[in-house]
Image (cartoon, helix red, strand yellow):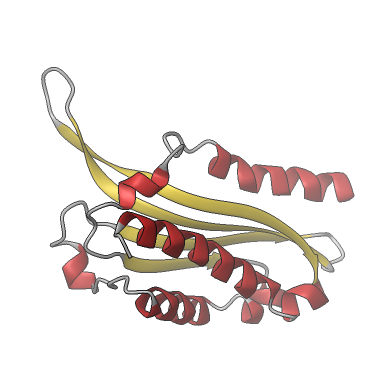
Length: 168
C-alpha cells in the first residue's frame, strides 16, 4: 500500500519536473501587466473542505494584490498580450485506508508564446514560470491547513520573482 501511494505521488510530480525551459522562469515575468488567476482542485472528498478552491482563489488574489501584482479580470485576460494566467492546481490521492494523502501542489504562469518556424509562425500556450511540490500528509495535517500554507509559500516564490523583474 505504501509503495502504491509513493508511485501515485511520483506520477503526480513528474509533469512538474518535465516542464521545459524553466531554468530562469523569472525572466518570463518581465513586462507582464498582470495575471489572471485560475484554481483547479481535484482531491479526495474527505479533505476537499481543507483544500477549497474558493479559499485558495481568494487568498492567492489577495496576496498578489498586496504586492502590487495586477489581477486581470476574465475579460482583460484575453486583451493583454500573451494572455498571462497564474494557475494553482491541486491533485490528490488517498491511501486505501483514507488516512494518508499525496497531494501535488503546483503554481504555474502560462502565456501564449510566438513560435516562428522557418515557414509558418504560430503561437503556443506554455508554462513560463512554475513552482511545484508533492505533499504526503495524514488527515490531521491536512485539516491543520498545511495545503493552504504550501500554496501560500509557492505564491510567495512567484511574488518574489515578480517583484525582482518589475523593479520593486
